[in-house]
Length: 483
Image (cartoon, rainbow, N blue to C red; front, side, top):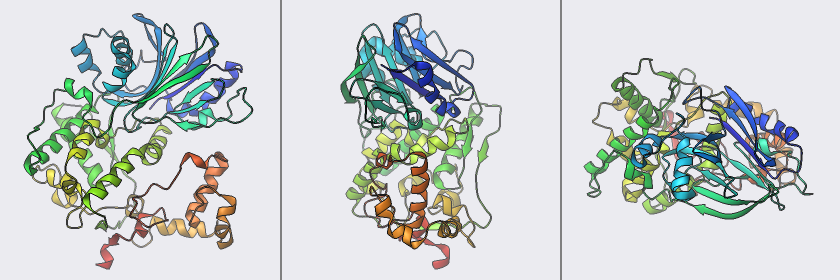
């Protein structure tokens, strides 16, 4: 995961402003670069590189001789760049997968450049010939991007919000730091003085619809209907394809393994593909846990299938503000690139196209269709495939004293009853409802004072009445001990 940063129309010295870009240096431990834009003394790019593809020639902003007027700074992986090269006859000048964005834009404009990409990405594209700036982000927001736009046209963009805090600008009020919306691109006019004007924010695709790049994908699946065997076969094919394309790297690949269904399927499929592709190094898996970990049975208390499907889609749309954001931060902080096969656009589009009654839990078992799809493949032992749902942080700790209990005991010494009673006075926006929530909010306010409005609500299913961060307190979980 690299770190991208850019300013357009800065009123302050760029050498001073660039200090803010160093706040995301952890995202790119291999190299960094700051580069001013020719002809615009108040515009610049900053880039911290984590070299995954093309170790020698992958520095950014990317500029190629064929398009000297284009500047590209992006964070991500474009898995279909070779397929697009073959189909359109693109002549790449580097080995960097992101170069395809320049060619797609030159050929068909920004709409095509965003819609044809199969991968995860956040990009800043500058066209000095047509005086345009473009921002774009992948469908689920796997790669992060934040922006600041002042009333007078100063634009700042960064992989993390911290790179935009305390920037110098001419406006009297502090501009709002906003996450750039997933599945969108935005067009800005670039003025002669380096300032910008937002012209259009476009949602280029709906995650329920089959992506346009499928036309250039060699994988074909049956479209004859929704009979169960066809559906299960398609799920297997699409999932294997999702894992296979994420093998693209010049560095070793590992797997974060919790022991649950999702990570076990990824690890098993990854091992299968490593053997088939004769990859020389062994698969390394990484897990965190303690002895005597319990299983938490999940018999999900859900509404009707259609209501459950609708709420699941809402949670998917909001991933970029919660789970995806946390996963990005924890891996990027250590120079790691995270790849998420279950958020493959083609896989999710197909899964969401299935009738709601196929996708809901059955017999008290969540992800029933996914489990059933791999039941007779031999990919996973049955005890793993049908293992009940774990609450990740709780399930990794001892049944004698869970992580939840350890946290509660620590927080009881940090937050008293009076502090919690007055939480709404101290934190009027989304006041914490538990001592643990209060504890976390204090940490957030310490580093990002007054910015709690970045998260507008708690990210939970609508039918769950819970205020505690631990899944162990949810009513629809029950441990083996209570059976």
